Structure formats: C-alpha cells, structure tokens
Amino acid sequence: MLNQAPPPNLDERYSGISPRLAKIAQKAKNKLFSNRTVPESVPRRHGVRLPPDTTREAFDEAIDALRQAIGQDNVILNDQPLVDGWYLEHPNTHDAFHLVDQEDLISSATAYPASTAEVQVVVRWANEFGIPLYPISMGRNVGYGGTAPRVPGSVVVDLGKRMNKILNIDAENASCVVEPGVSYFALYDEIQRSKLPFWIDCPDLGGGSVLGNAIDRGVGYTPMGDHFAAHCGMEVVLPSGELLRTGMGALPGKDGADNPTWQSFPAAYGPYSDGIFSQSNFGIVCQMGFHLMHATGHQSYMLTFPRDEDFPDIVEIIRPLAQKGVLGNIPQLRHVVQELNVTGQPKSHWYSGSGPVPREVIRQHASRMPCGDCAWVFYGTQYGDEAAIKTQLDVIKSAFSAIKGYNFFLPSEVPPDRTQCQGTKWVFRLADCLKTTGLIPLSLVSPHISSWPEHLLCPLS
Image 1: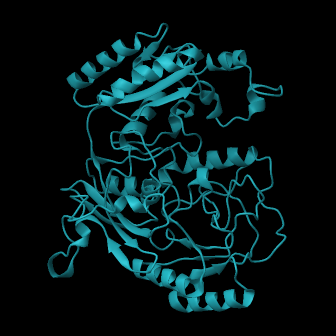
Image 2: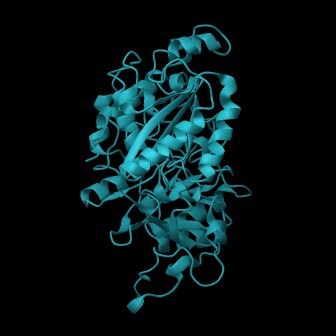
C-alpha cells in the first residue's frame, strides 16, 4: 500500500481524529485507497447546479445577499471538481459514496454559519429567496448519502466547521451540551482531559457528530445506546427563522442565563416537542444536551453458534433477555461472514470465483478467525459489580445452552489456536472499549472488533 497524505487530527481540524489514533487512521486511509476501484473524481459536465425554479441571475443575487449577511468567505459555490475523499476527508458537495452519477445529488453552494443567530439569518434568507436548504452536522452519515442534498441544487448548511464547541460538561449532573461539529472523538478527549469518571456511547464510527447521530436516531452499544433517548434539551431554529428551546431550556434562568436544570429534565411544562426534530426537516438543531454514563465495572464476552439455521432460536432467546433487562448492552448478533468483511480485504482475497462466496469457503476462513468455525457471533458486555455480573452471565449462559453446540468465551477463554494478527485477547480488550466508553478507535478500519490488532488500541486509563 502506498502511503497517502496524513489524515487530519483534532489538533488541526474539528473533524479530525485524535492524535493518539493517527497511525490507525493512516493505515485505514492507505488500505481504502489501495482497494479503490473507481476514480476519486471525474471531470464535471456542468457548472453550478442551480436550485429548482431559480435562474442564474436570481441565484447570484441571492448568494451575494447571503455573503453580505454571514461573510464573504463563509459562502462557497459548488463549482470545483467533485472529489469523493473518504471518511475523515469527505466532501460537503455531493455523496462521497455515490451509487448514482457523481453529479446527480449535488449542492449549489455551502454556507458556514458560526452561531445559532447566523443559522437564523440563513433560514430567513432562504425564505426570502426561495432557496432550499440541506443542513448537515459533520456530513458523515455515509449510509444515507452524507452531504448529498435530497433536492439537487440545495444550499448545504454546514454546521460543523464553525459550530464545533463543547459548551458545557456538568460533572455533578453527568451531562454535556454540544454544538453540531463536536465528534465522539472530541467529546471523549475532553472528558479524558477533565479526568471525569464518565463514558460516552457512540455508533461504530467515532468521527461522527454527537448531535447529528442523535437526531438521526442513531444507536450505540452501552445501556445508553439509544442516543436520542439520552438527549436532554435542544436549541432549534424553526423554518420561519424563530428560535425554540425545548425542555427546561425554554424557561429563563437567573439574570438571563440558561436555566441550570436544562440538562436535568427532558421535559418542561406542556407538550414534549423534541421528537418532531428527529429525522425531520421541521427545524435545524444548533445545540443539544446529553446525559453521560458513569463509569462502572464491566465484562465483555462472545457467544458463537454453529449453524445458519440457529438464527430463529437465537432471536427467540435474545428477545426475553433484552425485554427483562438482563442484557447489559445493545445486542450485537452478526453472521460469521461479517468477520471476513470487516478485515477490509476485497472479495478476491477470500474467493476468486464469481457469484456469492460459497458457505464452505466462509467456514474455512472463519476457522482461522477468533470466532472459529461458526455461523453466528454474539458480542455482549455486562455491567455492575463482580457478583452482579456473574449472576447475569449465569442467566445468559443458561438461556443460550438450549442451542446445541453453542460456545461461550470470556477474554481468557478464547482458544489459543484461533489467532489473527497478534493474538486474540485484544479482541476483548477492544470490546471493553467498544461497549463502555463508546470510543471506537479502530472504526476507520472496521466497525467490528474481531479484526483490530493490539498495537492499534488506544489507552483507556
């Protein structure tokens, strides 16, 4: 693999990676680019994609007005080459992982507001000139098109570049308030710098927006894995440009300050309106509060199941365990083929034929993975003191023992002949990191724990 230019880090850019993870980010970038099968950019056939029902003359007039309102350098036309980039260096002009033509879902321009007040200015401007807006936090929701506007020609409102502050971490209340440009990496690092006994919960990719993932109803791994459910209070710009604060933030604090109970109670007086701003276009969320998880004892484990047809029985066992609150984390059940997928190797590495990889080939390669020759893999973590964890694991093992041939592994119990990279114990060391702090330090290589080598782990202490 040829070395690519170093990825940005948090010391240089709000959207970068923690410096301690620079090596793994570099390795991931090198590997991704070495596997690339399509050009990163193709010559553009057209100039600026205008918003619907807008002439170039009217568009230029509107852009001039917006530049006067929020600054000449803070409104950029989308008339340059479209470069796909990758996760840490993604575009805000189009879908970096486009399935259709590169120019099909594309913006006309990007606006970079620096505050809630400037977001209000942008929204009022859009109303005046009839220009559709497409707000993004970090633009890394790659599974849903990232920064590609659903209405081609929309103006992207990039909230991350100039609105990326952690506004507050309340140690007594175990909560925080963040702007859209705060990533999981950034929040984790700040908690560590402050030496606070809290964990965060994030999805597989640690570089995404804490706020953006929550309003997209993203899911993590710990008991606080429902990210929208863990939020507490929002500051929202409505389509009219008016400002709305939800929860206790709607009530005044002393001498004009924020209400000190804003992140204590998710609801205030009257209707609870927060839900209408999740996965919707009813407003632009500019600040959001979140509860944090207190550090606690934990134990990761792995279950494997031998047959594809075990799936219905596994689900029927998981269901009551989850409903009764026995499972400490968000259940993670994966087919063994994902153990191969997440190594980042192309299909040709595993199988040179055409069509789907045969099941016997999958079994052959899986037998050399930490999970061994199996069909399904379940990763979990239990929380609490030693006695509570033992009781929980006894219940879990008893329930899954109904499936013939199942295996249960603690970190120290992984068979020594099932090795990959530098050993297997790192699988569970990273599982602890994954399921507790929510920091996913190796997600740039893979969203799954069994493919990440020990030397790339971040210190948690």
